[in-house]
Amino acid sequence: GDELLKGFADRLSNCVRSGDTVSRHGGDEFVIVLKDILQSTHVGVICENIFRSIAEPFHILGHKIHTTCSIGIALYPQDGQDAETLSKFADMALYRAKDLGRGNFQFFSSEMNQRTLERVTLESALRSAIANDQLYMHYQPLVDLHSGKVISLEALLRWKHPELGMVSPDRFISVAEESGLIGSIGEWVLQRACQDIRRWLDHGLNAVRVAVNVSPKQFRDARLGDKIEAVLQSYDIAPRMLTLEITETVLMQDTASSEATLRQLKSLGVSLALDDFGTGYSSLSYLKRFPFDRVKIDRAFVRDIINDTDDAALCKTIITMAHSLGIMVIAEGVESEEQCAFLRTNMCDEIQGYLFSRPLPTWEIEELLREQRCLPHHLLGTKKQQRCMMIVDQLEPSDMLAVAHLLVNDDVRILSAHTGAQALDLLSQHRVDMVAIRSALPDMDSLALQRSVQSRHPEVAVYVIN
Ligand code: C2E
Ligand code: CA
Ligand code: CA
Image 1 (tube, rainbow, N blue to C red):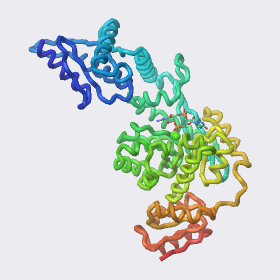
Image 2 (image 1 turned 135 degrees about the vertical axis):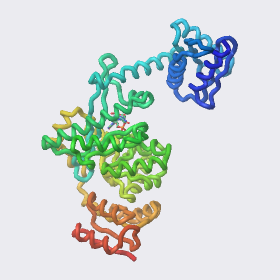
Image 3 (image 1 turned 30 degrees about the vertical axis):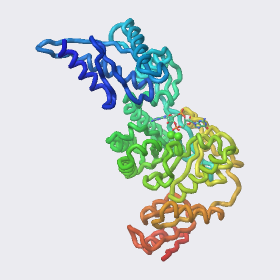
Image 4 (image 1 turned 90 degrees about the vertical axis):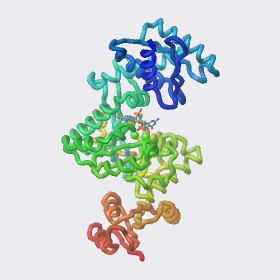
C-alpha cells in the first residue's frame, strides 16, 4: 500500500508544473494546488493528463496494479476566498465526480463544468473536421489605396459542423492551438490556399498574392520553412505569391529565435506581414529588427480613428514610421468611407474590411477577380500622385523619422534602405522618384549602386551624398 501511494504521488507530481503543490491528506486523498491558472480549461487539460498518467499500471513487488481516480475542483477567487472554503467546495465537487463514475472530474461551479465540457466537445469535434470535409476557405480582398485595385487576398478558415453549426475561428483556433491540432489544420490551410492559387493561375484569372495566417505553435515548428517550400513546389507557385501573416505577440516571446526564423522564411522568397499590429505593445523601433514587408494595423485602432484622437495619432505614427523603414502599411477592419478617407490622406498603402468586401467563398472571389472589381473612384481621391524618395543610409529609425517629418508636409513618401542590395530590392517593388545614397555602404560602393540604379531605372534621379 505504501509503495503504491508513493508511486501514485510521483505520477501526480509529474503532471503539474514545478511551482505547484501535491500533498496527501490521509487515506487515499490527495490535494493539488495549482498556481496562476489563467483559464479554467487549463485545469481540464491537467486532469486529462493525470487520468492518462495513472491509467498505466503500477508494478509493485512483482504485482501489476491498476488504479483510477476522481477529481473535484474549486477555483480561487470565484469559488472561495480562503483555503478552508476552497477545500470544502473541492470536496463537494469530488463527490459529484465520483457519482459520475470513476475517472471523471468536476468543477464546483456548474458554469465552469459547462465551459470545460464545451471545450472538450469542441476539441473532439475538431479532431474529425478535416476528415469529414467540414473545413473550407473564405478569402477577403486587400485593396491598394492608390490604384483601387485588389492586390492580395487573406485566406480565412471556416468550420461548419453538422450539429454545432458555424463555429467562428476566434473560438476554434485557440482550441486547435492548445490541443496541438493546429499543426495539421495549418498544413491543410496552406495546401488549400496553394491549390486555389494554382487554379486561378490556370484559369487565367488576374491572380493575386494570398496571405495565410501562421499561428504561434506553427511558427515555432522547426520544419515550417521546409513544409512551405514543399507545398509551393508541388503546386509550382512562385514564393512571392504567398504572404505569411504572423502576429506581434509571437515575436515578443523569444525575440532572438523569432528573428532567425523570420529570416529563414524570408529567404524562401515569401513575403511577411506583421498581423494585429498595436495589440502587443511592442515599440515601433522593434520593427527594424525583423524583415517584414508589411504591417497590418489592428482593427481595434482603426475602428475609432475618426472619433478618438489617440487612435488617429497612433495610426499616423505607425504609417510614417513603417514607411521610413521601407515597410508598407495595411489597415484592417475598414468599414466606413470616413475611415478610408482618413487612411488615404495619411498615406496608408492598403485597406482590408467590410467597406470593400467581406470574406467571400471561392466562387464569389473568382467572380470579383474576373470582373477586376476596384474600390470606387471617389474613395481614391484626386490628389496628384505622391512623390517617393528613397534614402540609402544606415540611419537609426528615430533619425529617419525626423527626416520623414521634415518632408511629410511636402507630401513626400520616404523609403529607407540600409544596404545596396536592399535598395535595389525596394526599387523593384515601389515606384520611386529620387534616391539619395550616402557614400559608405556595407555591401557595395555607392557609385556602383548609382550606376546600377540608373541602368535599371533610368527615370529615377540618383544622388550620392558625401
Ligand atoms: P485576423 O487574422 O485578424 O483576420 C481578420 C478578421 O477580421 C477576420 O475574422 C475577418 O472576417 C475580420 N474582418 C475583416 N474585415 C472586417 C471589418 O471590416 N469589420 C470587422 N468587424 N471584422 C472584419 P475571422 O475570419 O473571424 O477570423 C478571426 C481570426 O481567426 C483571424 O484574425 C485569425 O487570427 C484567425 N484565423 C482565421 N483563419 C485562420 C487560419 O487559417 N489559421 C490561423 N492560424 N488563424 C486563423
Ligand atoms: Ca490575419
Ligand atoms: Ca489581423
